[in-house]
Length: 416
Image 1: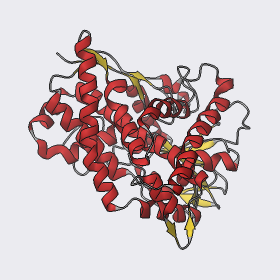
Image 2: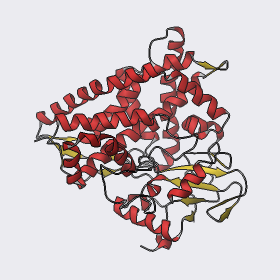
Image 3: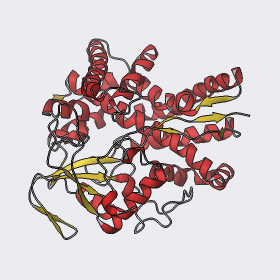
Image 4: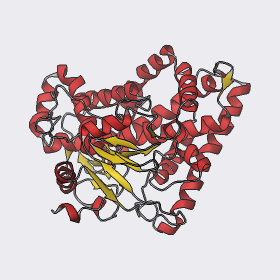
């Protein structure tokens, strides 16, 4: 592959295999670490001048750790500039800069009490055991096969988030369906007509917002012990979250907490299938739990990129950039950087050190739910090893055709 043949804005690039994409990013790291690309065409949105692809670990860190020079408020999750109200509605905290970002993060952190987090973590195993019970029943009712994503990896983070927020179990499927549309990245399986993409994403977001705003109003009058109740009653320096801010936070949870954990678990099972000696190593040595979870997050790199925008003329790694320039921080590439990771294309459950950016790079936008995600992944694999030691991948995963989420839509597995 030639460096001039690489186009990160082309749909065809994101339909390539994981190995082909890894090769392309390795070429960019070596030959063109700040490659410039035209913006992808999005119906009804005026494209901008283009963006720089930031592909090296050190450069991702440098930009992420300087929020005053490289802001998030002009758009963190979209390449084109979206209307401000949509930018914050779908991005919530990650599409804000200080001081507003700091205010909302403080309120959320204060509502997320150690007792609440402890109770939530204690409930994860019982939630997942129920999921495994249902998955086993599906396998036993047929030929022993089931879809790992549908029956195992997708339900866990979805149920954890919904129970944490106080969403009724009857609404789980609705939340999953609308989240899939928002995170589809234009995948034709979820959005067959790209001209309808913006409308469908807006409708999905509004559906989730309406669900959450109704719950917030209810909890304001009749609080319980869920996070929604804590959010509507918590204030910092006399300020509280509005119901719409809570709704935006819930959409962020559906994105950052649902899809990413699902993606990490699914890619982790696929990695252990590709590296069976690592699966055996981990199953027989549970002292590797911590490093194995970190390696799964590095390997999966669930969120492929986040955007930053230069607030002034600035220099990075000896190259000059102008105010207003857009940068896409490609975490997947940073997590394969040969200058940081020994043999980065090998999955190693004992990898140490592991300075991955699977939860984002250093800075104010580092993932607020990283601890919870780690516990979900840890419990998921521990219980699968204990209850489904014979789980076997029996087909290639169907990957989400998206430049933003490194998702797996389906993956067949069998219980013998």
